[in-house]
Each structure stands twice: as structure tokens, then as C-alpha cells.
Length: 112
Length: 112
DNA sequence: ACTTCTATATTGCCTCGCTATATAGCCACC
DNA sequence: GGTGGCTATATAGCGAGGCAATATAGAAGT
Image (cartoon, rainbow over all chains, first blue to last red; front, side, top):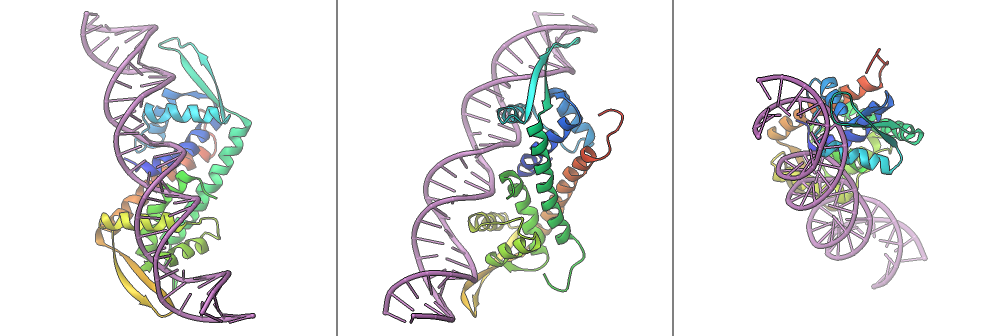
């Protein structure tokens, strides 16, 4: 289980990255993340749907309803151009932090 | 400037990693992080001190006062054995998320 | 009818970062 | 000796947001 804070920080970059690969609907996204992380990262509906709504409010994603052949209708989300830019910003920030952590985890210099 | 969520997620792993390198006091930690991140990551006192207090409450760090030759006294913090274990857990979690992001940013497979 | 899986939505609790503010020692300058 | 600036720690209060719990509902099998 991930800490709350790390889950929070990973939410937007993961979601934007997934939608950057192609449109998807909420329920499928949850399962894909679980699959891609070998079960290490699990989102719940109470986490995912509010996030998608916030991203839509910010015009980072757009959505449309689509009937399913095998169950309830689905709401598909896709990345907007603004969302693609936001993804690049998220990437840069993540990599900045990652670089710092690698420095701190790497071979110890003479001092500090 | 980092997003609030990413700052929050990075707080504990960065702090524990820094103290794993040796004991340090609050004000110096703020400057070291800024230096190590080339100014990209900046913590404020209102972020750092409550964090140190939380970590101490959880017995992940221990502290003692030390007079300074050139200013106000300083409170030095060091990692406890429990803190070292917590650092390993934080590392693992961070790397799990990082691995997922790398998959999503990597070369696109045939499908999803 | 009942259960299970799929699928989306919302309320409310609780954690926690961060702005603003307070306190205080030391030093340089005028 | 007052003023400003750097060093150093502390805390109240606000606001954002994850997530458990809960609700709704279609489809399919028993």
C-alpha cells in the first residue's frame, strides 16, 4: 500500500500519462494501473472519479458518454492539448524530485 | 515551483534520506535541499519544522539542542533505527511509482 | 429473487502543507 | 543605540484533497 501523500502526488501524472496513451474510462483505468504496477498501486473509485472531475473542470481532459455492449454505459476521457502541456510540467517536476532523491541515495561524497 | 502534492510526497523520503547521511538541524536542511536541487525544490520553515516534529513523535528521528558559536542555538536531528527502516519503505514506494511512470513514458507497445 | 461484476457519483472525515506571524540571538552600519 | 538583515525555531489557521462509505443502476447467471 502506498502512503497517502505519494498516492496524491502520483495521481495526476499517472492519470495524464495514461490518457496520453489514448482515451479510456474510469473503471478500466483503475484496473490498468493495478495491472501495470503488478498490484502495487491500487486506486479506488472515490479517488479516481473526483480526480477526473477536477481535471475536466481545469480543461485538461474532455469526456463523452458511450453505451457499453456488456453493462452500464461508460464515460470516456481523453487528453486535451492543455492536458498534454500539463503532463509535460508534471513530468519535469517528478524528474526534478527523482534526481534529488538519486543524489541522496547515491554514493556518499566526502561531505554532504 | 513544485506542486503541493508532490512536495508533500517528497517531504518524508527527502528528509529521512538527508538525515541518513548524518545529523543536521532544520535551517541547514532547507539550504542543503535548495542547493542539491539547484534551487528547484524549496522548503519553508512552516513546512520543515512541523514535519520534524511529526517524525519525532513517530520516533523516526531524535533531537538535541546545541549552542551555536555564531547565532541562536540549533536543534540537531538524527535518524533512529526505526527511521532507517521507514526510509527503506519510503524508497520502495517511491521506486514502485517511478517504475510505473517509466512504463507509461516509455516506448508505446502495440496496445495499452 | 439474489448475487456478482461492471460502472459512475457523492458526502464527510481527517490529514497535512503552507502562509502568516511570533520570538530571539548575533552582527554591521551609521 | 537603533535599524536592518541573517540565522534559527515554533505555531495557529486555512484550505486542498484522498478515501471509506454509501448510493444507484445495468447485465448475467443460478
